Image (cartoon, rainbow, N blue to C red; front, side):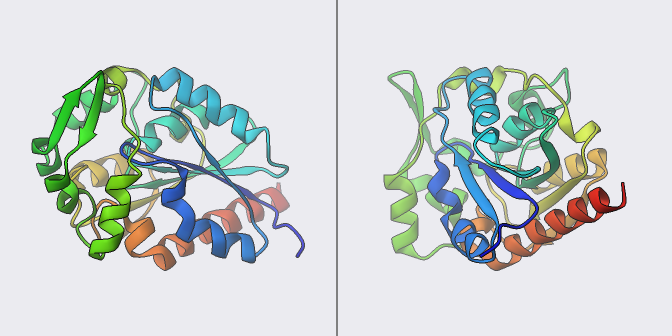
Length: 234
């Protein structure tokens, strides 16, 4: 199948890795989109942004960056790259130049998931009793898989700056999870409004790419088509 005109690069959040996008990647590949997930280590935001920029270099077409949760911070930094044509945020953070993931969240009510973490051995672990606050609309076997494959961030990851503000110059799309208990839905709405994003609200938990993948794919398709149309008329 001929490759579509946009490539899709996925950026995961905390307690995850690139496999959290598997329900998006497989059907998008079948449609002809070139897809790749940035597999960074959640050790520092600077490292994660650098690895994402390296991953952008592995694809051949103008890039749509898709970031979930903390991955929104990553695409906000990496998206300043000239190869990036658009940004899709999924229940994601989107800090400004003077903000970090932590300062953004501190302006809104604390979400329940942070009562179910364990900071130990230099990492922040999601405890089993927190899975319903993270992925409450998944079936039990998928919740267990999320816990078993969680990526484990360093605590100071929340304090770092993204190193860029791509949403100020790139077209953006934003998916709000109305039942999100990890990133507050009102914070998501505020970020989407600030960036002037095309906004969609889904009746989902923090992980709509797993619980409502078809709806998320629709948004990614819309972003890819819009970017392609803009390029064609430029």
